Amino acid sequence: MVLIGVALIIIGFAIRLNPLVVVTVSGLVTGLIAGLPIVDIITQFGEAFTTNRYMSILLVTLPVIGLLERSGLQNQAGHLVAKIKAATAGRIITIYLLFREVGAALGLLSIGGHPQTVRPLLAPMAEGAAKAKYGEVPEEDREEIRAHAAAADNIGLFFGEDIFVAVGAILLMKGFFDQNGIEADPISMALWGIPTAIFAFIVHSIRLYLLDKKLDRKLGSKAKKDVIR
Image 1 (tube, rainbow, N blue to C red):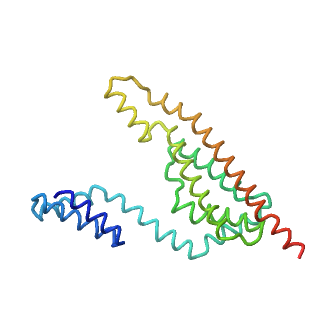
Image 2: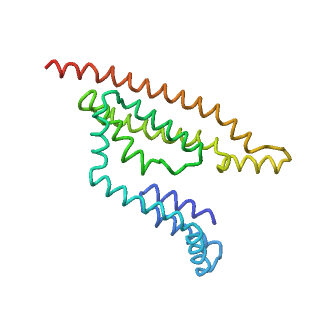
Image 3: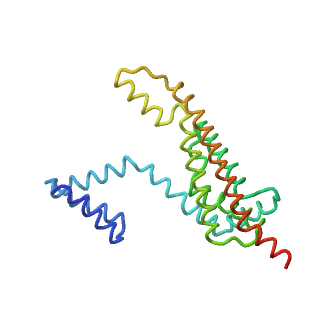
């Protein structure tokens, strides 16, 4: 019966109710079925919120990004890149991938990210480069450029952070080895992440190069026809 809370979450998400309401109601129902007093349940909610209140700081960035976008940040980013003749969507994203991976390797995990960098800056810059080279870009290709921009952030962060010795993954492995009597040096584990990070950068750079080639094949001929006309 205690698992009825899980069923309520599944049903609530399935019928697209407010996630916050669904989780709150599920927690209350689960606590009541388990025999906890309502006061204790509410107290646990309050303690959880107080313990994780730093997470609400992330919400502060959302209105800031919204105001910047409303003021034309995306358009300005696209116009700026359009002035650089050598810029392409793949090259712009590759530069960001390198920046993101090196930054993560140095422990600067929050220097980039989807809401604060990819959406308002990187994706518009990549789209602007494609638009400057080929003219109007179809929605399908714009979505693919955005997907590659988001993937570059994920890949750069994932493989770059494993080089930073104080990252959670390294410390987790160190703790696991210690519990099982295996000697492990965090610095050595971090250094072994370097070849993997380099290989990941090369592989994804090739993917971005192929993205440019694909766009050139698909949109390059159309752009030439438009120029002739």
